[in-house]
Amino acid sequence: MYISMSYSYCRMDIPVFEQLHKEELIDRDALAAIKAREKERIVSVHWDLRTLVYFSILLFTTGLGILLYKNIDTIGHATLVTLAGLLAAVCMGYCFKVAAPYTPSQSVSPNLWFDYTLLLGCLLMLAFVGYLQYQYHVFGMQWGLATFIPMLFLFYCAYFFDHKGVLSMAITNLGAWMGIAVAPLKLVKAFDADKNIIINGVVLGLLLHLLSWLSGRFNVKAHFASVYKNFGVHVLFISLIAAMFQFDDWYFLWFIALAGAAAFHIINAFARSSLYFLVCSVLYGYVGASYVVVRLLFKMDGAGGFPIYFMQLYFIGSAVGLVFLLIHFNRRLKNNDSVQ
Image 1: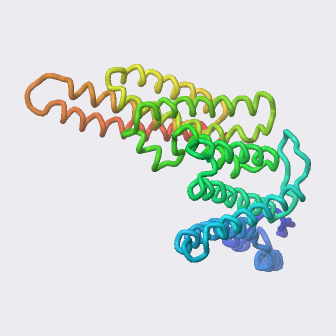
Image 2: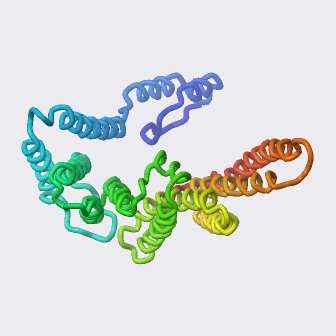
């Protein structure tokens, strides 16, 4: 029996077709044609090249920073500042020249190199402004301006050029302006941070959630909502957990806020079929609940090491329960998983 097939829609699973040939569901000519088509199939290297270009930009900017640091005395401050400023100006000038007019909806890059040139220009601009402030104190003692002005520029570029990478840089600068380093390792140090920084973290997390909602509500770069929400979720939850550690007398009130935030995001994650935010909410909620349980166990009266044994049982049992809970959620959402 001969079965006519189309070869262009997907990659061929050759062993499957060989089995079909053995069962005489397709003839030898059809199998040979399938194998020949698979050998001639064009392999996409799109994402490989994009990754290499991104790494090239990071390596270039890192190398430029090392060059500035090691040769500052021989090259001269003015030369280095001028070089960084000129390179940034060239990159940004090219982007403004070839970019399409602004639109509140999602836009397409004019060419392959546009995104990378924009990213390089923004990184060089940050290095330029930071170097000016560090070496020449152009903003005087107003160090906040050294992050506030680049932040405004990055937000403008992110919206005008429709670039999520630049938006992430702008959010990071917003956190730096508020005294918060929006990076995983830096955020973990919030547990030992000043209480004002923790409050700023809570405010920043709520602000990013508001910006995420406004993006979708008014349909202004609605696809940016996921970026705002991604930063906002981690900043808010980590800040709330840090507040439980730092504000010892009021830790239970902060736990109620954490539980409320976790419940809200879990409900929202189910509504949007987002496994990513569902897992984040459950894990952060588990950390907060475990802290409360540990505190209560340490306050228990009794002889021997009963609280310690009970704590061990709690972590074993809760960890197993958490795994089964996540598996259950995954089964419910696996057919409609998204990161929104």
